[in-house]
Length: 617
Picture 1 (cartoon, rainbow, N blue to C red):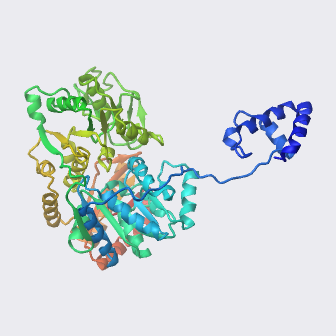
Picture 2: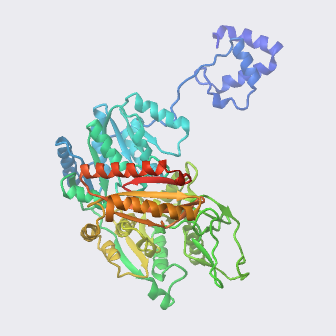
Picture 3: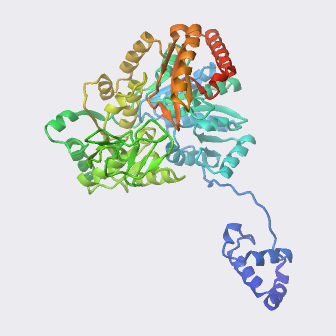
């Protein structure tokens, strides 16, 4: 704007000739700070009047770069490491100085994050950059709030829920080489961190680190190790329940193994009780899916001013609806899978292609009205809990309830503030969240985890249940965990109860060595697909002969996957087992590529498609 002594003259002219422009100008003056007004404050003002004032030289328009991230003061002096953490930190530094990456195996609530923060602080002091990887967006909100207090404006966040403009801002700050801590999910590996000094992969065991569809099919943990080798910087892997492969590498000297097997604040691990649901039903003590013990304890916890978490790794209301007369179930028209019923959206939905349809009251196959709801998803648990414990305030943390950008944060914040009594969730709630008042954790149905057809089923079941159990009693008061199962004698449940990772590791290692699975072999999964089921069957039989000529008994298949049709493509899988030596792996990959090239040239396979997944999860 012009100098103050000219203002009265401008006002007089506008009052006579352009009263609308004068009105806008006065409004801008009332809004402005230091004579400038942000464009987001101009929504209710006339655009034409503003343009006219700019043309006359009364107003000036200027582009100003404004950060989308709030400014925060940092305070790096308000936390103190325990003796155990100090020892772990020293061992990590020694490992890095020797040029070796490290695995920090720390039980839940052992204080791994504080150790990470000391390492981050040291890198930032050198004007360098740190990449802190997390497996889930749900983890970022709570962790970021804590890290902001220590690292202030040097903290940046990157994940898929960010807008394009927000991603660009993170991208350019990384490119400029500013000293930053970048917290993000697996895609953050591709940021141009020009001054990268350290990569931390938290919860390294998580399958969420694997990008399996669409390509590129990469594992963020393994890619981080490769990137670090190229840049000659260290990597720290962290987990309370390391993957079998990572722990094996640490035991065999590829990584330095550092362990923290005590909780940071002196609290005890939660007491874990296995509840036999067959006995509960036989004695008619249960109410729906809930044991009488779990319901009673949730009420007791609420009366003490504490909170509960219920874990069920199934979203929706029920996974299957079945006719009691003929066994008909509603299935997806595009995929070979039953539709999941969502009560609150009142539809049946496919988790693979998003096909949906209205629910049915009558069986279309036989006309029978008796349709049975089979199984429990998080929605049904929330619904039934409102019946059996209507005084408890609940919410869900699952994919369908957290689609909006800030939905994770709102639910987690509400629970942290004590506005909810019970948080119901899928595996999102098992990873790294820290709540002061959580005293009770309930695993609703452990059996469906154990029964999954995969050689990693035992490992993943142990990891999920141990991690979610670790949310209980993270302060001085010991927490309680109830695991409901029809087979409480199952070895994995017994190992979870005794927190015996070593027993799981020994058992899994022996089985995998006997049957030639990782870490003793590497795997490549080949998935062939075709729109015509018969054409696919004929093709894979020919492919089978070709692959067996080259790889012999090391090639398994063809076999139908658990879901054998997705988006109208029929699927068949092969699994190739390879020796761990680099020369053998290169040879196998070259031979596999030759087989695929030959297939591509054969016109009879024109409608055939395939994908190759190295180290499938």
